[in-house]
Image (cartoon, rainbow, N blue to C red; front, side, top):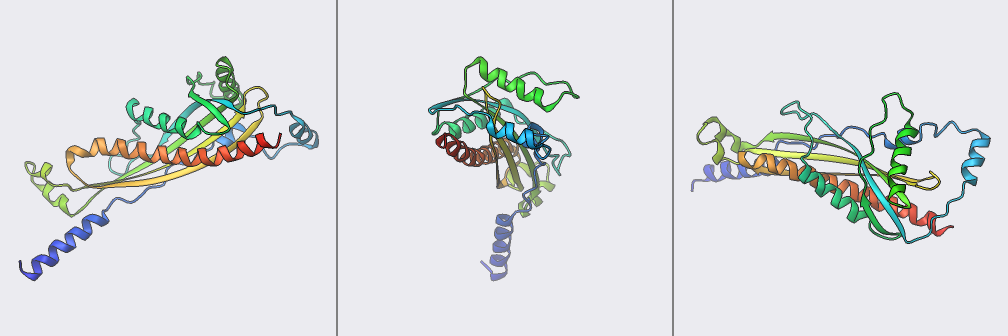
Length: 248
């Protein structure tokens, strides 16, 4: 093989590995801010009341998880904000439950999503609905999860094969990148005391895809990043809760 041909092949290979899809930033999350809107507005009496509220949690604990919403950024390729189908959503919930089923928790299960409060309702209304749902199942702690994802689609040098309609499926010319962030908060169901909030993030990419692989690869990529971001948030949150329970 002539040297110039080898150099061209090597350049194309390196370019395809580098890819053209960059990891986008997912939308911001405001779960904690929504749950505690008056975080900086407590007066002296309010501070005393908050510090004096009894926390009677004793391990092993049980918990109920509510995935409140998903915020999907619009893709650069289509301009659409697309949600995950239920199959991949179930995978994310499965990962979240597995991450939370550790000490001091003995059992954690998914809760049915409570009805949406009115648009002008106070944030406390949402928290009351979640606590009520957890209380019906007699769970000690309610977990509230909010996630956000973003994705980017790019092309690599093999995409030149897309110029031919007939040959397009034969060239792996699409690159995908996805990012996810998660915010996970916990509240004592009985007292309403906030036990902590934590955040996690993750990103991943999938390169040199054939046209017929793109849709499934996109969904799997979003599920993967969501699971990893939620697991990271769960690790931090369980440390916070364990410390609070141990101090009682």
